[in-house]
Amino acid sequence: MNELEQQITRILIELANYVCTYGEFPPKGTLSSDGIDMNQLLYNYRNGKIEFTEKQEHLISLLIHLLSKTEWNIREVEYYYCTYGYLPYSKECHKLRKAISDFRTGKIAITESQQKRLEAIGALSTATEKTVRSIEEFYSIHNRLPEYGEYNHRYCDMGRAIVDYQNGNRLLTLGQKVRLEKIGISFKKIQVKKEPGLAIRLVEEKSISQRKINRLKKARDSFIEDLLEDKKILFKEYF
Image 1 (cartoon, helix red, strand yellow):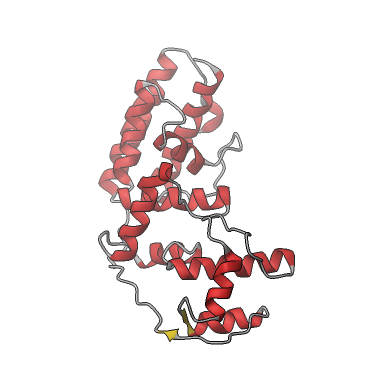
Image 2 (tube, rainbow, N blue to C red):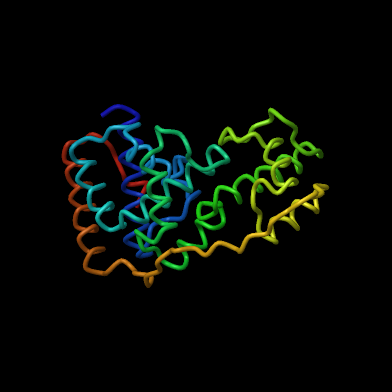
């Protein structure tokens, strides 16, 4: 067992211990004893950046079974945003882009807490709202408004967008107009549109059942016993 394989094994056991103890998955930013973000390990696995052994696959399959596909996707969107500072938009991120669209349109139901998490990173915002946010962010960093040819991460020309807003060629909500006025944008002509209503569909929060946790405990203990029997690695310090 090489060093990377040992590290992955230790993190998986710590992750299983956390779920067995608290009945939920650790929030993003929860570090293992090795100082690794446990959610980052899951993200890398889901995106094929790391490979697991057969025994590791068995343990992670139970963890995946405990956590819904919706929650997996939301955590990946959050991780992407925290890593790059913006939401996924490229063709390579088609899966995450589709998930965000499904959340916004109500095709996939989410809980109220999941809605708040997505709203916090702007994942449920319209294209106009994302552009307005990028203009505000640009202003806060550079202390000036973007000019023609200055693009945000979505390749939207923010300078051109400002001119279009000022001339009424692109519609804004009243709230967006007020926010842009606060950073020095004046309007010659504007047509205010209604605040868009979200079509999201909410469901009740669900906790992990004790039955599922017991299954995870059994798999974890079997996983450890096999490793100790093979004398590949010692885990005493983790229990």
